[in-house]
Image (cartoon, rainbow over all chains, first blue to last red; front, top):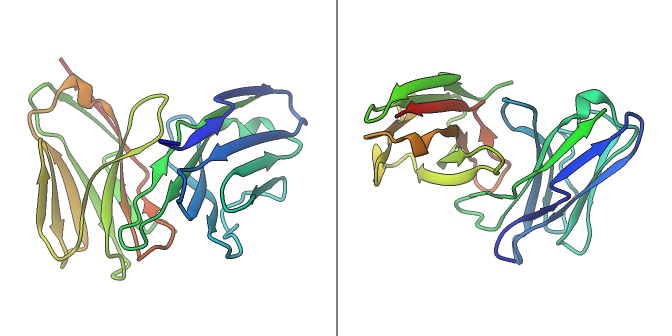
Length: 114
Length: 111
């Protein structure tokens, strides 16, 4: 597609439920990132996929968070047993150029945990 | 550990003013310094970027000033407009590795 597509754009869930957030990166982009942005806050790195390499999971805040990337394209971020502090906008980004690593972000998925 | 320190956290100017956002870094291996602009409800988008071998880059009303010896760089917005109201993030890249972002600056430009 022309840009990074994320779905759903908004998700309201109850505490304790599991949620899945989807990211469809730009075709041909080998790198994919997930970030979390809490209200009025900066960009918190979560996880990074690069080609067929093992993902860098160093930013995942707890073992309730996991992500996968199938076929080097679409990625799903899963949050199990959601907590109220998980409420945030989850941003996905992709990139290609290894020389000037410019990220193209999606519009984000806003998660609200009641 | 915050490797890119961004200031101020928020900034309010009048239309036509010149807001300046500053960033400082420690890692001398950083080799690319992009700025991203984020409007409410949208993801950040690349605004302008600079490499450390130049001291200034200008694109329209946006200018990056880069001081390699001081390990600092800043974004200047000339003749600011209400439409420039957004959150601005500086970043620093080391090759193709995960970019390091500043904490962001919320800019409001009053009409």
